[in-house]
Length: 104
Ligand SMILES: [Zn+2]
Image (cartoon, rainbow, N blue to C red):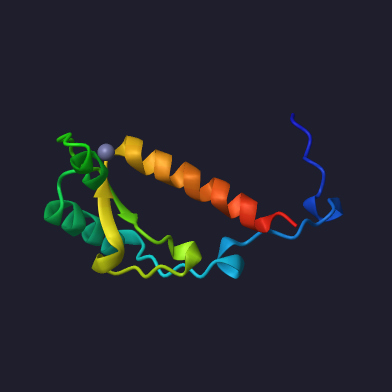
């Protein structure tokens, strides 16, 4: 018969890092968020960044031009649809910029 695991109450309590405490995030979630994502991709089905390079590629991600974490709004004027590759590159650059800003 398996023994019981040690009680959780004896573990040191770590304060959970809550994204919502640091970054106001007004993004729609659940069914409403999925519908909004679908509507935006229907409105702009091709990657905007690829189009600037004269490449025709399907967009798969509605991207916030100014990230919500930097005060960007979750409205259609702040959305561009991107392919996964461009979205990943933009997200990586935004994370690097955020790290730079947090450095003392
Ligand atoms: Zn692209």
